Length: 144
Image 1 (cartoon, rainbow, N blue to C red):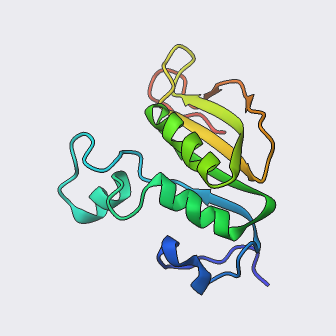
Image 2 (cartoon, rainbow, N blue to C red):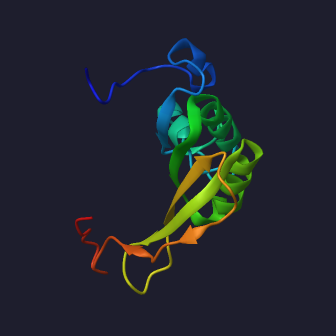
C-alpha cells in the first residue's frame, strides 16, 4: 500500500476522494498573492499558481478542516505579508497555528517565506522557531 498517492482534483470537492476527518496531515503550497494583488502573470497556469484566482487560503483551510482528524496537522508555506491571513483562515476553521518559522536566503536578509503548521482542534499556543537560512548570501542555496 503506497504511503503517498497523488490525486488530481478540486480541493473544494475533497469528499470525492476522502471520507471526512480521515487524514493526519494536509500540506499545501498555496498561491502567495491575493486575487488582483500586484502584477498578475499573463499565462493562465502561472496566474492560477501565483494568485488566488481559483481558490484562496480560506478555501484551503476549509477543505483541510473537513479532511483532518482531531489533532491532524495543516502545513503551509507563504510570504510574510500573508501571515495574518493564513492564521485567520486557520482559526476560522478550527485549526490552531502551532509552529511558525521564517525562511531567509542569507543570515542578514529579510525573510521571504514562512512555514506554518496548525493543528485541528488545538489549543492556543504558537511556537516561533529560529529563522531558517537557505542560502549563503551569494545566491547559492544550501541544503536543508
